[in-house]
Image (cartoon, rainbow, N blue to C red; front, side):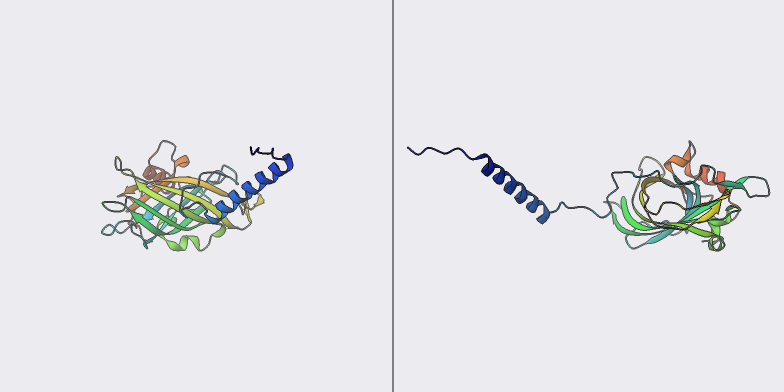
Length: 244
């Protein structure tokens, strides 16, 4: 009768290594499908605190379809790599204003939904600017408000956005990855934000008749206020239509 011989320990080890290599080769040949616009699962840093506005034409509305682009402008109220107090006294009434502002330019790459676009995905660039005497309300109305400011950081942005059908809120889930930084002098010393920072953020949006557009605020920056109230606290109540 045929009797099976025991496998030598060295030969058994060789078999195990061969099986492992075959498995690795199979995974390399058939990588898992990954969407390029997936919300990021890890958070390497705290996000930049943003409060701003997406201006709209009342008869058109905000960008919602693939290929459309938009610009959100506003104030930076916090940055994980900078001191907590990013404000100076800059108005005639003595109110403190932020020394940092931002401009987020984006394009929608994909929109989907059974009755209108319920979810949109896109990408863009977030630029952060510095002005020693601070930014007032003109940053929302006038593109030239950035001309005399110093660009200190540029981030690549990927996002997906979805409206809340039970409220008037729109949520933009954002991943920011720094691609360039520049040194600047602030609070008596030279600063430069990290050039390899990445973070996830949630921008909460709300349509504002007062500002004629969508007011946005980072979830961490709202502090019990609505996005519109957060914007009014920084820019004051609007006195004229938005022109951007």
